Picture (cartoon, rainbow, N blue to C red):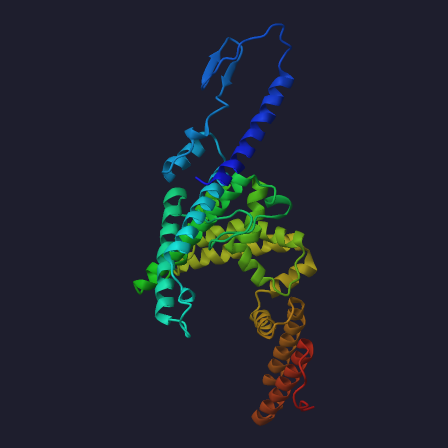
Length: 392
């Protein structure tokens, strides 16, 4: 193995051993006589009061070093080397080995210095060889470290990995972070494989199957995260939270409001997704009742004024205002005034349609005027230049 890898690992391990030895010397009672050192190897000494476990602290590098990568990985894990450190050592060593292979086995067009024009055929051969070497590298690392070897708990690199930072997720222990990243990547992979298989077979994607994958992912996360960490994770990355953010665009939720709404909705939404997605009359009725109870619980946490706006987020006109703002690249706070324009326009059109004193032609002309005025108001809200002056 590479000398600098051993040097780095040696420094880390010897520092840990020095700290451990210092603590033992500090806590041990003073000795009145010199005692010859005795070598213990995983010996357990029992007495009536306590069990003392004495572990071997000193070893030779030859015990770890091996030209066989699987053996080397097993040796690192055997001495209790953290999984993150194992990955860092192996990835760096394998990458260096394959970089040397690329340097010696790949011949680029630049090496043909005597030619006036680059040899495109040589370039194609070089690219193909580089791809073959990289495929070998990835296959070896996958064999040694598992399918999620390129998950990095600080800078997500694999599809499905997430950023774990902040006052809650940022304090998770490194090994736990790595496990969370693996679970996230696995869940994303399972969902992608299901979707791809359904499309390849010409079948519809069943939302229930995706809901099951999400439910399994939650259960796995609950085994490694505290309740506070799990909620923070779900607030950031769950499908329910993402859907809620989409619904509340323009609502302007505060952090406390969003958390309260999420808590009131999340469990009910999960239940609906897992058990009440059918189209039969009984299922639809049950689902409607559950949604009604869910929204009532949300409104109770918000107060009358904010509850009224929350109800508006389910209005198709509010959705239309959200779409207009999104299409124009406007800020979320533009949604509410756009919605108010939509509401006023709809109210005025309904009034015109119900005016029996107007002829059909007059009603059509009046509705066109309303449409012009709506467009002018929308453009003003979005900061767009006015079109032709609307009909007064």
